[in-house]
Image (cartoon, rainbow, N blue to C red; front, side):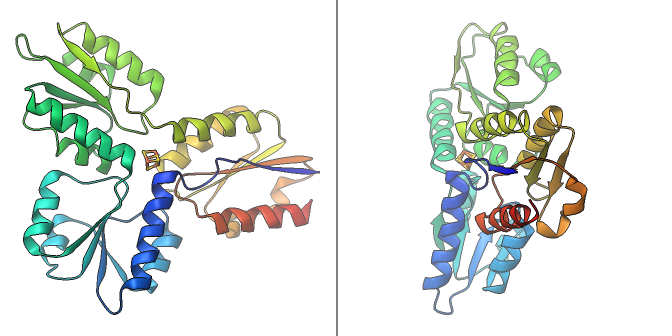
Length: 284
Ligand code: SF4
């Protein structure tokens, strides 16, 4: 009987950094109010734990408008430039946990926008990371996530175009959309800003799912990267289970399998993965 745990299961570098930042601020707080601008990660367990330690989540700009003191932590997704300006005006303490890979995209789009280029962000316009990037890209900015949108994109006459990507976008789809856009403009610069953490997690999950009898994917139901991980694993292993915590796992369901693989989305804390791993081991 064998349990194979993916090395890349769980927090990526940027999420770990943001979560550690919150806990380290909690330690230092000494009664000072701490807020995160948006939930720090897509994981209810972690958010509840933070709330129990006095961290409040600001879910909108209206929530932010009501804050007059304390510390506001910016999550790994990053935020638009105007949010920094708003925070500075309020005089609250800003702790910036924007992932450096996302910060790099902010700098790229700001610099290229200053040069007069039309910024194209390949990504989901509803995703907070994309909304943040958009907020550094000036006036001429378009978000594209489908072939149809790429076909319909019309840059201005002789307009230079600079394309970047949401960090978690699928690479093949990015390439395909870039090809469509490149045919429309005389001058296109492309910066592949996709983060390898997601790809590496997916590649490892797939290679494990291909060799085991059952696969367990752990993560919040609202986490899009966990949903994607589940789809990939299920494609390779019919016996794949999507759970949020150990409570969701019916160990009898696993039946008489010989090998079980375990992976987890980018927002799944290590203690949850370990708890599942230890209990699966006991059964086998
Ligand atoms: S997926 Fe990559 S870019 Fe996004 S937070 Fe994690 S390390 Fe940063």
